[in-house]
Length: 93
Image (cartoon, rainbow, N blue to C red):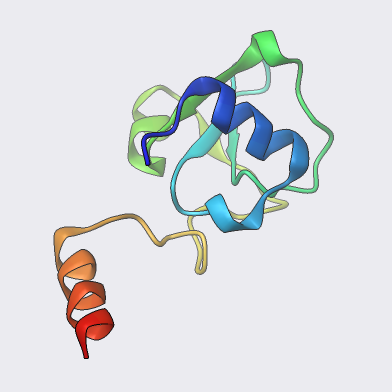
């Protein structure tokens, strides 16, 4: 499933843990990026940008949130080719 900005915003406002690891939310006014499930106060929608992974958020000049720690497990389920291959093999067996 391709995530749109609307899907991502819905995940942030509902603090959807199932989408942790699929994207991070960058708050441009604070310079911080978070997991979708972060318990911090919701930012204004106009101040938010969504990134597919923490590396892209860091490249945009943002730092990780100290509350939800988006660079630690389980949020680091970023879709690497090796991980996807392993998951596919496990599902078939």
